[in-house]
Image 1: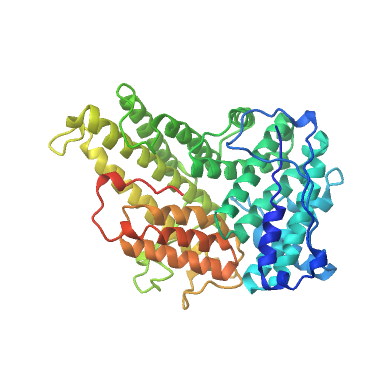
Image 2: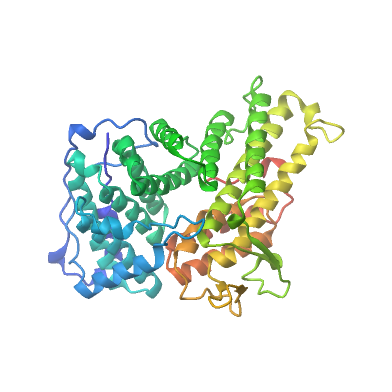
Length: 501
């Protein structure tokens, strides 16, 4: 059943906790919510990402709507910080925003309200202004109300404006994330977007804009599935197959996404969270599949077209808070860097799967195969460790450009590092740090890391939080610090695996 979870009471409660909300008169307190139902036309869209996704409810009354000037400011902030036009090999990010706003068929007011909520949340987070945050939550409540209204009509539910608004609210939760409840709300929005993609079906594949929306939404769904170790829902996989039939050639970003879908299937078979061996007959077959997947990604790297290549710069004099171990990369754009980091993250997870099979399964059923004294898989164990460290270091080397320290000289076309201060340049769009968050957290969470690596990642996450107002960066930094007990001991093989949150 296609449902939308109401997060309004939660965000308004958070707003009430702020200084501004404490000043609101008792007469403005919000009435309790009441539930309403979803029309039967939206009741069957296939399997979804568990547990429950969205449910439709009537919305609580929110604070007063923002003024006209504040509305414009919120919209401008969103467009300047989170919309990237396509260029060269880069597809851009949310580049269809203005088209969705101008679409006479969709609900442009819904899009405006959702964009405003995100923009005002960004302004409030960077300036620490409670009153603007309160207005951002008012726009959030308005957007939820409008989304629920759209879901009551199956035709409106299929519009680009509806799924755009749902995805925008997931970005709102990233900006305002302060605890596990925010993470749950983010998951609910992505889950709802997955349901909408399935409801939209093959018709969304008939336009370039529909294809772009599908591609960007799928990337968020893959992130969600990775966090919760769940396969991509089969209706979405079938839609990807349908798209693939229409592609004249597969882009690197498409190939990486496909590899990640395959990885999630492997993880279902392996059950990496399980401590005891459970695959006496299948482990070696699954191991061969995992090794083949890693080789597939390695081949992709070798075959990438020239515009996808990046420059490696070694500068031992660079500010060590900005540049990890004196090495950084220069990419065509932050979007290209994002795809590279997605590839690296996929290889980290694949090698985690290989490691799990070797230590947990081979160690139980055929220990002689992983013995340091001539075991046939002993070299693979070392290769897994080396590849994981290489992928981690690649993610860390992308951080300077993602966070705005790599500048481009328009006149000469040259790129250079400007890190006279460890503080991020304030003129940098928030999209780069937003792209980076999960990859940086992944790189920092590897239990093979020395203490200084994790400390460096925590410092960069906190700087992202300070400079961009993206609260999730601070939340993830706090999570990394909770694993402090693993940092000062010699780590046995059993704790190589990435911690779960």
